[in-house]
Length: 133
Image (cartoon, rainbow, N blue to C red):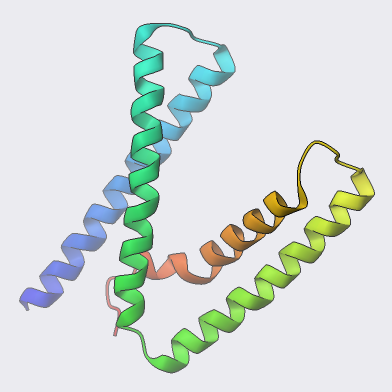
């Protein structure tokens, strides 16, 4: 009973912090798009950067904690999905890189973006699961 309550509390907290992240991201985009330049905007954007950094660390930590609770076959499936999506996104990135001739970015940044997208699509759903057994 107590373990189930902890899981629900962690899931509830994760959802709340994700909503706060989405709202603060929207506000940050609004500030950047409108070109608002004052002390409050600067402090808000600095706080947002710190919050975004710790939010990403928190999400990775929760994903690892919940990943430990999964069965080995499920971890294996997700890892295979990660590798396939990473390969797909990397190939698509290379194709778009050469078709559109983007010269002001490196190929390595595309690989990092592909890895982040593949990881998010493969593992981030376990962050919000209530029952991880």
